Image 1: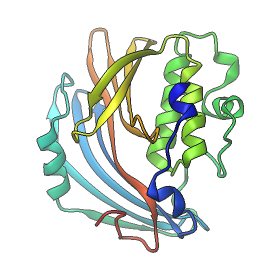
Image 2: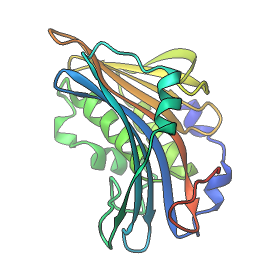
Image 3: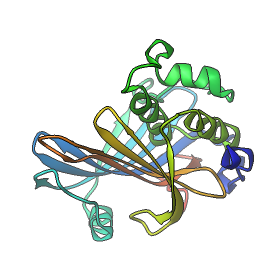
Length: 228
């Protein structure tokens, strides 16, 4: 709640008038008994949902007991890109915009309230917050609302200062729910989600997913990064 009350602005918060929302996310995800590794840049035209995606991949890793490494990040960035252009309506945000800035209606959109007493509810709510962060731009008030949603989770714990795979400092928050341990790394000044990881216990314990959000903002056209 203290973080939410003091969320700072970013230069990209003032670029919302530009036509494209831009996101650059690297993902490590479980697929049966392997880990896929993907670098995705997305430009979504806000007016009609058209746009462009640039996808880079590394060969899958056998097994699921893996921890993402900085060198993988650089290998992903150097891999050849597959460019896909999308017509009107081809790219969708996680939730319809504009997003609410009140945590109560926002949490209701992220996970069904009628499941709030279920043990897996915190996991569902965190998945919703991560889904927002990796698919659409969150302004200062929306970032604060997401932090207030997370603060309402009874099982969330503060893990101190850490660094993500890109070496950026942040504050770690962890939730154990539904057989999973989810860790979020949040920028202490801006309230931006830098990274999110889920590890599962049980017979096939190991990595379930890891998201590294490298860039977010708005651009004049598709194919142009926020920070070239």
